[in-house]
Length: 362
Picture 1 (tube, rainbow, N blue to C red):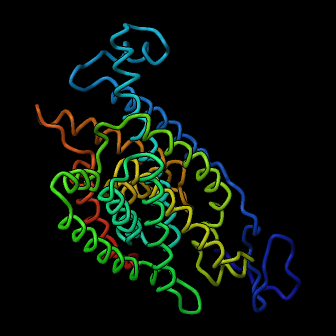
Picture 2: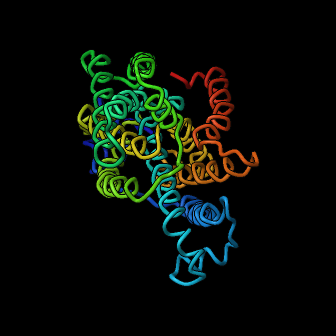
Picture 3: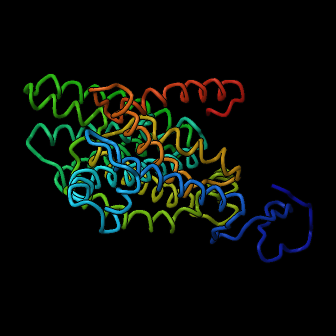
C-alpha cells in the first residue's frame, strides 16, 4: 500500500497515522468490477451451466443433451421430462447450491484469517455441524428443516467456541486457525463416539451423510437450502467488502475506521451458516471450500477476495465430481465427497508445500 510523508491534514479518502498519510479506500468499501474478473465470471457461468445439463443427462439412463435442454424448457419426451424434473433436477440443484455455499464460505474464512489452508473443514466449522447433525440423525431427525436446524446449531456453536477460545483482547486469524484445528479434532472424536453407540442402520445412514453425497436428494432438500442461501448470499454482499479491509491486517483496518471485531464476528457467522446449511443438505463435502477459492484467485488474479468466482468454482467442482462418481466405475456410484476428497487431497498437499516455502501458512 503506497504511503507518502506529509505534514498537511489528510484529504478526504485518506487516513493519517503519525504523520503518514495512508491513501486507502474509504471505510464503506464498494465492489469494483475488473475486466478480467468479469471475463472469468462469464466463462465459469457457462461452464457451470454446461456441467448442470450434463449432470441431468447422465445416470442409469443417459439422455442426449438436446433432450435435457428441451425437458428443462417444458418440452421433449414425457419420459425424459419425468426423469429430469422428478429425479435428477433436485439432485443437480442441491449440488449447484451446496458448491456455491462451500465456495463462498471458503473464500470468507481464507481471507478473514489470511491463510490459504483455513477452510471450514480444516478449522472445525464443518466438523461441528457434522457432529450435531449426526446426533440429530441418530435421534430420528430427517432431512429438511430439522436437519438444517441441527447442522446450523453445530456450525454456529463451533464458531462461537473457536472465537471464545481464540479471544485474547481480540482475535487474530492465526489463533482462530490453531483453535479451530483443535475443535475439529474434538468434534471428529465426538462424531466417532456417536457412530459407535448407534445402531447399524442409523450408523450407515449417518456415515453416508458424513461422506458427502447427492444420492437420493429430492425437493425436500432443495427448498430449505434455497431459502437459506436467498438470505445468506445478500448478507455476503453487505459484509463482503469488509474482507478487503481485514485482509490488510487489524491495525490497518482500524486506521481505515473498520469495526474490526464486529466485522470479524459478522463474517464468521455468515460463513458458518453457509457451511452448516450446505452440510445439512449434502453432508460436509470435503475440500470444496479449500480448493474453490484458491482456483478462483488464480483465475481472477485480483488482490481481494473473489467471492462470485469462488461460488461458481465450488458449484463446478461439486457437479463435475458427482458426474465423475457415477461414470468412472461401471456399476458403482461413488459419493461426491469421495471424488472431491481424491481430487482435493493433492491440492492440500500442494498448498502445504507452498505455504512452507513462502511462509504464508500462518
